[in-house]
Length: 143
Image (cartoon, rainbow, N blue to C red):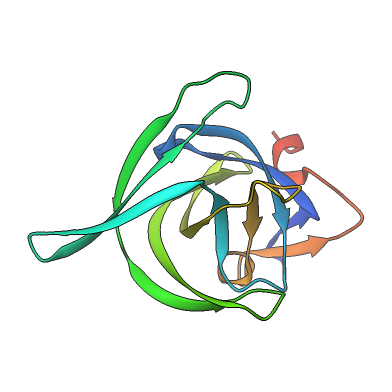
């Protein structure tokens, strides 16, 4: 346990490869995968490889929209807390927490009706972090 960092019930994180900074992310040990809000995406194949293209707003205060494309790492069926299953496309990127970059596997979903645009799931948390549910934003306040 000495080597694990402690995170709170929510953290403010950066996804620098996506051009996204100060994202409010809920720590969700009940969710297996990490998910990021995205209203629309398209999966396509090119030269025998699958890619996901999506549009994302880096700042809710203006109308700027980024169009990003990443190779699909894998696909998996995910069951929501409501019992519905859906196919998710997972891609690899980097997340900044504690002023360090970590590899992360992300899936995309419309989370516009949710309180947080991002969930940090078990696949990312496990082995790296302990969760202190009485605290928030530990990773940003540590540097």
